[in-house]
Length: 165
Image (tube, rainbow, N blue to C red; front, side, top):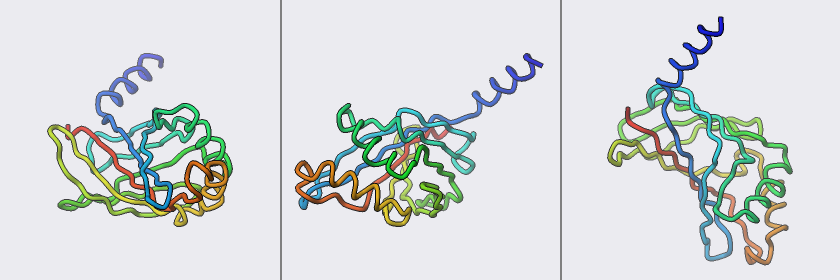
């Protein structure tokens, strides 16, 4: 039984794509971007058309530990959002349609597809209000009011990068 499990795990790992997920949120009236990634992204699928990911929100990484602490505690934990699920529904020419589930709400997001070397890159935008995340947004805006000059934007640019093979 152990051998069977190990074999299935190895088979699954060989046919699972590596995926990187990126985000840019915006602050101040000048709409200054703050970018980052997530360190824990579980990927399932062996090709772009059947790709799905589970993102641990507490693995957010903006390159600034203090900011990450605030994002986890004053944004994600406010509404008890511990993960984000995303699944590619359709790849059509230069578009990728991704179903994103956050805060128990599913939305289909159209993303622009491009190729960079051996990778496919998808870029899109989500609106936090579409996922009922305004309570969290108001919380982080309150915590960062001076740093954000009183303004935290509701739109977030998102992207992912995955190997073509």
